[in-house]
Image (cartoon, rainbow, N blue to C red; front, side):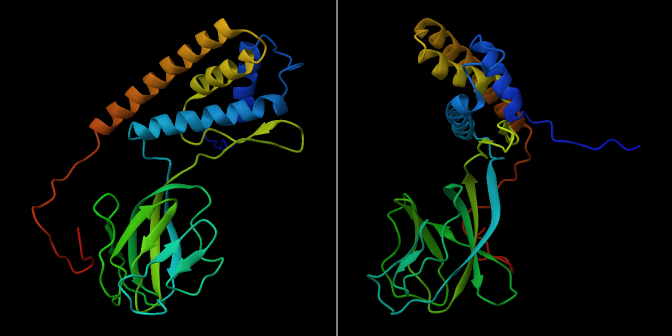
Length: 255
């Protein structure tokens, strides 16, 4: 019989078991799943953030599509704002479209005219480059800016479909119907880093300050090992030099 494959990533149950062992409660009489869950999720977010700062780019979502409606008026002083709760600005305000719930920060955006099967054109990221230009709207969006938890556009004279590539919040753990912790660390092999980090938070609540500091230091050591693995992997990634200046191609405006 063929063997049914499964992902090799560390599960919530495995992490909970190690956390309980580190907290000297292997049977989970005091450190129950419900009690440990917030600290485990906090540790998972900490690990993902630290690895993302070290260029681990696998916690990335792609192909999220939204349609930005055409502007109400052609006005250089007006912008269109896409937020987690809807869209506003120089368009009819609405609860949709929205930014994806798990978005941390947008990485790249592409556009094309809505309802047209044509190549997606890369958009220019104006974040940290003085912001959006002050000009009249055109037939395309062309530029975008990430500002105060929203993507800002100048807007366009027609409906525009935008594709997002963004860094995402890692999948968090939850309590299932059986009272166990469900979920996994996605593509992060970080059971030790997460468990020691969570245990350091939990055991400090029980007055074990010295042991908490020890566990915190151990979690940092495991993090540094994982960060080193990420750096080594990136050294083998293929890199192609880009030409100087602006290069045009049939399928895109800017490369």
